[in-house]
Length: 115
Length: 112
Image (cartoon, rainbow over all chains, first blue to last red; front, side, top):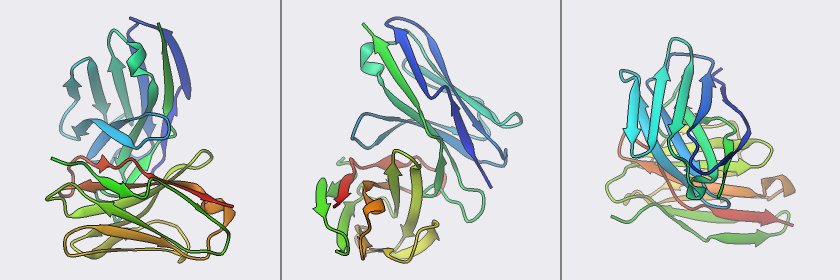
């Protein structure tokens, strides 16, 4: 059964710092991995989708990498800003009967960026 | 292009009642999924519909059901509500398998 773990559960950094969020999954037979952002009481915003054939995806100050063989993904945020404060979640499709609509989520990393 | 729209935004119900939540996907998206989010369990998959057919189902009791209409709009129903059903219910849509999943703002359900 696929399990997704995110470490750390919470992170507090000063503005301007570069930071890395970690995501690990137990079964490497995935075809993609998606990173989301969630603001309190709101829905999820898709940040990056990495296909299994890719190793990295970039969007602005965000860079996500995927290493299927080791079961890991990282989300790198450059020059963090207070507006980046949110919970970041990673998710992979369920292995059996799985489609993009059926994702397994980690519990998230709650990021706080202090001015 | 409008995003995923969920209604209502908030609901308060009492134990034993039933509730129906609505979701309108992004135009052109045929897949609609539903998730339950609680502080303890995080995000858990409920079910997915594609072209009016349930394609996948999570490990939830039969009190949780859904359907999808020909215009891809979806509804989720919970019967005989329990206190533990209090959660944020999120709907998501995608154009097809292996594409990005886009979420709505959710319906916050409180069961008293």
